Length: 291
Image (tube, rainbow, N blue to C red; front, top):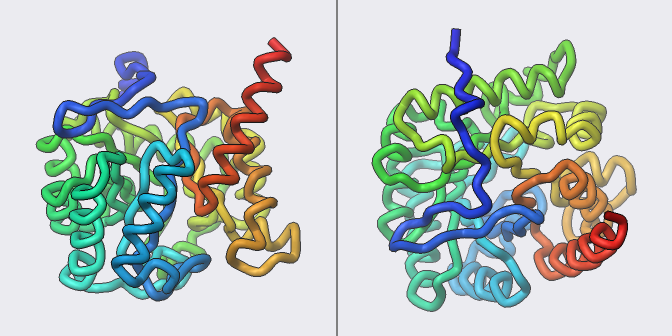
């Protein structure tokens, strides 16, 4: 049985980053998505060109992103894996150029420890792993050794198979239990609990109804660790609105941002940074008047 470390893990208002920097979280902070891939579900190919990826990241910083998330492998349902070498070739030059031109915090979205290590050496500040550091046994050791923040996402199976693992007794309770286990395993491996985020994995091995239930009850997960919600432009938004994958789902995605805000999420992971930042400014101003 996994030990319960929850009473030992504070929920900080800021995170320690490499090079003596910090990242303020909560409110929630906005993480901008940069997929350096040809096949991601919403923006595949848009940022596959390195220069376009760098320019998009710098624009997100100007638009108010607290951090940008760089990924070189699609994790859409049914996605085929790419080689470690190809993933490194996609993300490392982008991270190096962003770091040369900006001090914006950078997250590396990968499930491979060698990719993460090369990204950290290039200037990344955080590891975002859709397998919660479980796919590559060396990932936990890297995270513990580097001391960077980590995002542990919930997913059963892998991107190619995750939609075959969608049986839950109660999706929120089951996801909470498994995320707690992943968090405790990370702490046992030497990762500072105060540097851990959890992500319920909206759209990853979940049905339409599961996604809505997780968003409606996300507050039940927030006691495990600071919460990241990544629902931007996902299929459930298209199911409800009839909009195709891409920018047309932006408005519907803001409703998920509102749910994340209500749940006390520390961070939202989005494609549309400027619109999300503006939306949260107004939402927060209204909420402050309600207190």
